[in-house]
Length: 236
Image (cartoon, rainbow, N blue to C red; front, top):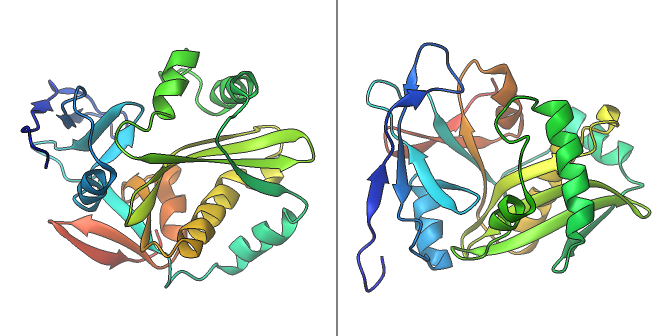
């Protein structure tokens, strides 16, 4: 992919955070390598994604439950519930920022993690960790903010490649669940990908039957990479 070869690493088996009584293994791109954005885009199409400074794909010997998913943005049509979400949040403003207030972002991130993912391993996320999320070492990064007046309600860290956007990490105000800010962020990312003429928005992994991931197949049509090929998936 580059003039110098990329080294790949396989993690040791560890407890699967998604399915009980299973082990997970992950293939990592050498963290010392900086990928060009079109190379990273090719890896997205092969089922990889980014978490902070790591580009990876789950590759478990005895399990294929994790399915990479993406939305073909030109074909996407919002459901009735998603249209209601857009209408309910018509008073909010979306902007793409290049010089964010990191203290403001960290305060919202810590509130989000404490309320939505306590004990999930990210509750001690530091400023340096967050800067790793924003790193453009492997691709461009779009930072989408959603605000009501001056109040920051949501942030969507979005990877940008010549072919697609990828929803890397989204966090939002946990005190306004009626706004469905996670859904709203994805709808705005779809709109941004369409505006830029990009083919897909990647949403990471989906596991059939997982309640926490069911929202991903509510954005129809949605494609999953199964047995090395992308195909459309029904709603979960």
